[in-house]
Length: 244
Image (cartoon, rainbow, N blue to C red; front, side):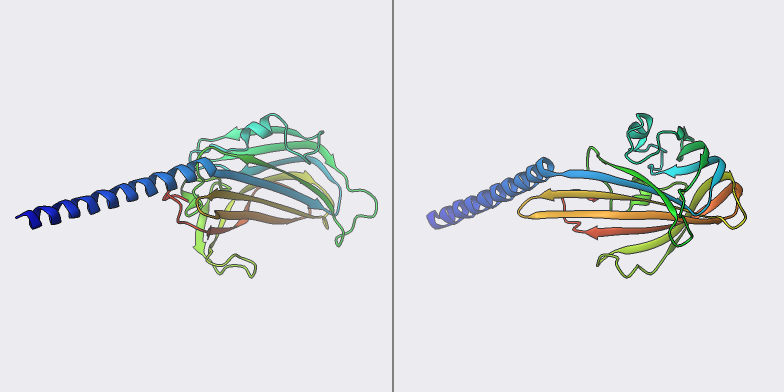
C-alpha cells in the first residue's frame, strides 16, 4: 500500500511539474511575442509620364480593409505623405467597401529632356505602425489591399518572390481624366507591404506584398482597370496568433 501511495504521489508531482512548466513556457512565449511585436504598413505610389498632362483628375485606390478602413487615411488627411506634390489637391472618398484618393491638378509638365526611355517620375509614400498583428496569411480577408479586389486568380510567383509565397493576380478600379498628345505614355504603379516582426527566442517576421500597375496611352477620360499582384504567406507563421 505504501508503495502505491509513493508511486501515486510521485506521478502527481511529475504531472504538476509538467503542467507548471507548460504554463510558464506558454506565458513566457505569449508575453515575449506581445512585448516585441511590431506591425508596419509601407505604402508607395508612382506616376510617370513622357508628355505634358492637362486638367488632370485621378481616383486612385488607397489600401484598405474589407470595411473600407485605410491605415493611410490620417497621413493623407494631414498631407503628411513625403514626395506628394504640394500643388496637388487631394480628397479622400470612403464608400464603405473601398477608399479612393481623388487627385486634381491643372497640369503635370515634365522637364526638358524627358523621353519615353527617361520619363518624368513622381513618387510618394509613407510607412506607419499599426496596433495589433497584420493578417499576412490571408490579407484579402481583412488587411490593407487595393480594393475592390476582383477576379482573384491563382498565379505563378515572380522570380524574386520569397520562398514559400502563395501568389495571385486580381484587378481593381482606377479613374483617369486628362488631356495630352496621342503618343503620351502614362504609367501608374502602387504597392503596399504589411509586415509583422517579433522576437521570442530569435527574431522572426512575416509579411505580404501587393502591387497594382496600369499603362495608359494618349488622353484618358474615365474608369479603367489596374492589374494587381499579391504575394502572401511570406516568412514565419509560428507566432501565437493564427492570423499572422
